[in-house]
Length: 289
Image 1 (tube, rainbow, N blue to C red):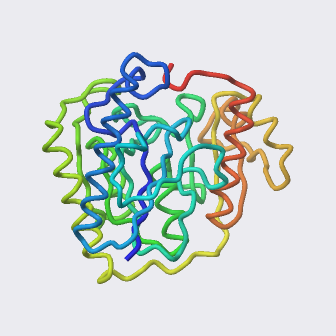
Image 2 (image 1 turned 45 degrees about the vertical axis):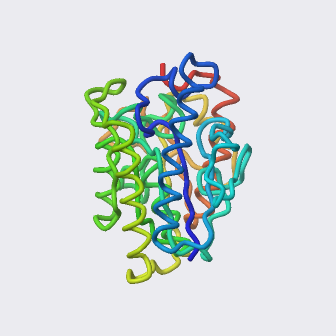
Image 3 (image 1 turned 180 degrees about the vertical axis):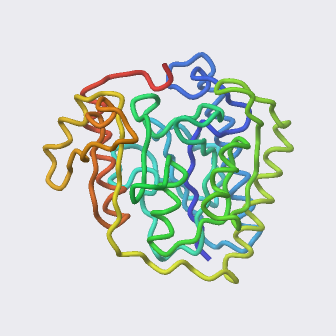
């Protein structure tokens, strides 16, 4: 059995502020250790459930956060950027299960370090016009479109509730309980790692008995509302990207900051990485202002 682990940082045990998760932050090195231990808990859970191969993808910021020398020796690591598929690099239909570790709630939710991919630059995202998504929803929809079931997630309680909106069968390990965007009640570290290990073990163990999602090659629509109208204007130069018509539910300024594009989910996920590259070049904004 092959297990894929996508590891972000904002939802990691004990971390609540920008200094915990940003390179150069006063507590970033500690945050790296905490992230590595959360991932190791997930690897142990996957192995206990019978996994014979575990691939970990470091997906936060520079994608060079996990301490390679301290990572569980049974896991191989996808490290560095750019990666064409970003948070889902190297995931394909050969995997039996996908696990999301250290994930966080979408922009606008009152979860710990909540945002969607780019701090405050992305205000809202929708799939097929009516489904609000963030990193959890977009990654979940893309993984299942590839035919891989998502079986476990760790993060704050708000992130755990968000994945349940997509799939109530996903095992969750809440490692902290949001009190505000930069405050939480923390579970003791050993207890949190034990919860991660158990959630992954049970999720992976049940994967063979679950009906695998059918690969989805149909067309979907991704809409992104940016903080900056400049980003939307530049993205309109990409073939297939449009500025949606005025929506009475939104004011004109919001309309001016939105883009829409259609395609199959893996292609949309990859194209969105290009969107972020353009946005970073234009804005240069810190992620958590």
